[in-house]
Image 1: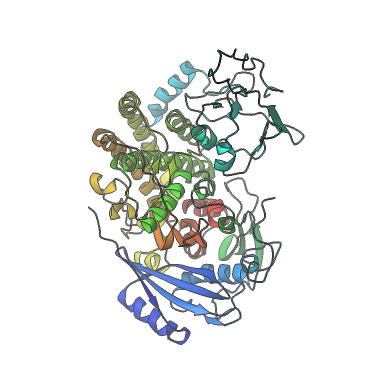
Image 2: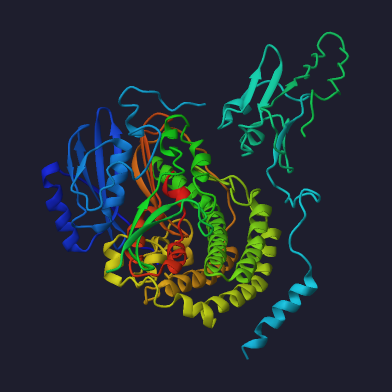
Length: 126
Length: 139
Length: 359
């Protein structure tokens, strides 16, 4: 059978984030992923939820050092994505249930995905 | 009965012989389209540069004035994009995998294609179009 | 009063196909807590999008993982095709489905072998991998590569499978299925296997859903989520029902994968019967501008490629979330109350593919 799959993206403000996530959890959505995109000088953090193949995204735009509250009190498995976001992009996330404090993904250079924004080398063809 | 369930498998294994091949004493099994390494026929290459542009790893380098076509074997992933893109069919994909080397090797081939003269005024004799292959065979 | 000690598991361990590190807090041979740590093979493939054009990135996407490589290429190509609104011909959809199901077969047979080796049953490990060789031979004869196929591209497929080769594959499926069923019989009905696996690492249905796990790990607990139901590629025409078990222990996770092997063989048979004639690809014009979440069912679960383009030949963002990353929280929940000797079996039962996890 073919299920009709739809994807919606909703922009939310940082302060409303926890309330929106609580609403989705009460509706029975499961957390799919938390992703981060570098746009110019800011970051877009994208929370994805799914139920019966209906896909909902909450999008929050933050500056480089803005603190983002963790949703791991609602979704226990979110610590993986939040630690990865902190280790690769340098976004400080407060209140994660298992906080690795920067040792989840050990790389030679700290915050490797924010290099282009800081004016470092673009990807080298070495 | 539980004890004799393995008997069929044991007999099949005893009669069948080993399933493995003693490579590299015996050549590896290859299929008709197996992607091993890329070879060029320098006599037909017209230096258009399409292979160099299509290569996703920038492994092919072409110098039009010097008439040199180089491939860096360590960058090549044998995807076959250059073979598909060559409009004159000078590149082929050989099924043997390129064996490991101890030093970085960049293979160069001299392009020996000569454009045939236009038979406009008088019938010009075609040059032999270079029968000798370029330098170096692959291991 | 028993003391607690910390034992490091991995990154080098004989049962692990790829390096992951777990710090196990033990109290007299029983695991009390487990703390994961990854990052040993981070290659930074997501940043490579700045250097490779969107048509060339398929080759990078394929090489993220060696076991589930074809489906990464399909997911990426589907994402670009949705952004640029390209219609792929039907024959290309069916060919992609056939190769995807062959890929799933070889991945599950590889996992069954590793799982048997983790339990100590080495003979079964050798038998599974010998069966897997026939699948790899088919992949090599039709596409040119045993693990990296290189046939999927944006706009369709690069190579066709001829009618005689398809008929040969169809004939070879019956003896292959018989051997797979013999193998599955041992996994499902053998007393030693059952004694080792039943009751180990039990996760109930609600907890599995709330933790966000995907793939056979969550289908073994009773949650029926399988993205092949959404009907991408040719699955809409072929029809598909997910394979679900209800007990939620390691035995159920093994049973789900064994039954998925049978389901894949059936899907390949039906796809070969119904494949239409037609062109293989469509010419790609223009550049992608927009964003899309492309989701595909890999052998380990749901993989998501988030692609975003701004009208140039280089995409601005490619985020790849692989199923093992989503299964790490459920692994951390499974390990408490397991014995130290059972830890390899539990870790293997989620099918960890760490090279996908840290691209």
